[in-house]
Image (cartoon, rainbow, N blue to C red; front, side):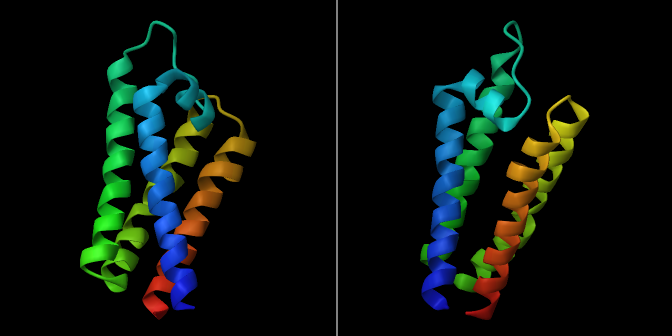
Length: 122
């Protein structure tokens, strides 16, 4: 179970880091993938902020796991599970589809909570 817990945590952290990098490098396609496309004349700063936020969370998760341990990473995962839950609400409130809100964001929150549970059990 330890290998599974650590592997899932690392994969999730790297995935969030990848999402952050994608928002920095390809902001408009990333926004569309998020579920709420960016307006062509919209302020690109908000997409950059999302990229930095996600990238920072990915790096923080990796640092916690590497330098502090599984329990700190578990608490981190438990706390950050709120983000995809609210992302699902944001998608629904701004015209995105239920498939994206629940199939991507809500499902991500569930996987993050499973990761937290596994890390607490280690």
